Amino acid sequence: MTYTIEHAEPFLFPGDKTGCLLVHGFTGALNEMRPLGEHLASQGYTALGVRLSGHGTHMQDLIRTRKQDWIADVEDGYHILRGMCDRVFLLGLSLGGVLILHASSYLPVTGLVAMSAPYTTPEKRLDTLRPILPLLSKVWRYRPQSKPGLPGKSGKLLYYPAQPIRSLAEADDMIDLMQIALPEVTAPALIIHSHSDTVFPIKSATCIYDAISSEDKDIHLLEKNEHVVTRGEGCEIVFKACEQFIKRVLETSR
Amino acid sequence: MTRTVQGGEPFFMQGNATGCLLIHGFTGAPNEMRLLGEHLAACGFSVLGIRLAGHGTSMEDLIRTREQDWIASVEDGFQLLQACCDHVIALGLSMGGVLTLHAAANLPVTGAIAMSAPYLVPHPFIATLRPILPLVSRLWPYHTKRHPGLEKVESQHEHVEYEAYPYRAVAELEDLIRLMKADLSAIRIPVLLMHSRADETVPEAHAERLLASLGTEDKHLLWLEESGHVITHDVEQDIVFDAAVKFIRRVTEEN
Image (tube, rainbow over all chains, first blue to last red; front, side, top):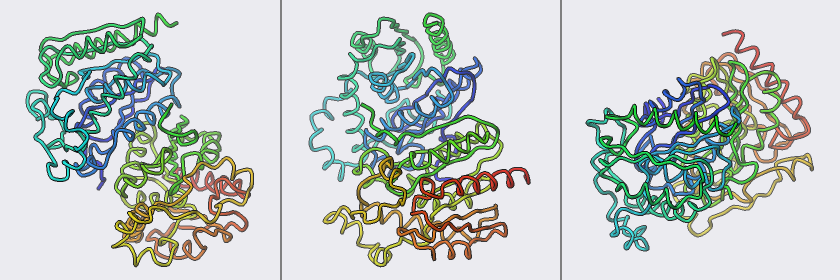
């Protein structure tokens, strides 16, 4: 019996000297990134999916988790991957996108792909309550999971049944940290976002695109994908876009 | 600026199909396992030195950390190593040794090496105080370290660790050791214990009690004479490295 729940474990597909670090989203689990990891591995790359602290185990663990733990998780994955690879690409979904954008501002990465990432806190209400949220979260502990997180069209995704309020405060802080860091991002970047994303508006993608300093940057807008663009309808388009982006960056950097 | 401090980063060295999972100790960092890792890598093995949750960053992070986070950290490392190896050997120092023995009972590892591992929290009152420790820790958060843990002076400078023990985390360590103890008799894989008679942090009697409690028939205890607690980074480190390599070769060839 393991403490980590099945299919939420980190994964590693050893390949060539180009490493892809995959980071999942808030209250999600690694199986939302695994098919993308498998696709990149089939192209010959090394793919590593990290499990974020407080995820893939028990919701109570998430409540104790702070943004600095997630930042350290991404650094861990980067260091492990660097042990096998000469170059590292960061790919993240939603909060994972926030984390990899933040990490790209200070880690020497070859390129990055941010998918369905927010630019600002989607809810002003939480922002206003932020100073008292840690206290408030002792009584108002959870709120329902946002719709696309539920298993359904996107296939069997592992999600915590609710979103801990205390952790939402950390996610919000993380978005703020990312915003400040965006001008420091200079590596080639691909921003992917779907018009059908009901969690974060499509304009997040353009805001992030405008804020980063990368000379080589591209934006790929999707039509039908849900928030978890790496699973369900249209996910092959995302896989292809990531694959082509990595291939192109590798060719131009040679 | 990275969140992890220098020496606090995990490390990975790709080698053959035998993977060595290196687990550092309480308030320590991956750095204390690095020399051993480099030696094992030079012998051809694949090596992953993990960073335990709450370690290698800031002491405040450790206060929020619970035993299950450390267990999950080990499981994460095991998963990654298993992806590129046929056999995984767990090697841990001190609390890393406790986690190693816990893994020996709960994960499909081929062998386990526990170094300087405690049989109980080496402080007389901790077990008794356990129920009120979380409360006490709000008033007295930290316990200052007394022993340097290392006899070798050069290693003392290179050593990366927190300067004190957070009481809240000591409570978790106590719980973790209790979990491990319940599992010892269920261990069926080869186990090697290493301990120094000069260890001031965890007295030698702990190693004897661990040895007696292990359920496996393939169990050995190697004594060191002059090292401090951190035997992977001290005057007899070469003895430790050689014993580890011999053990790993033996158990992986038998399988």
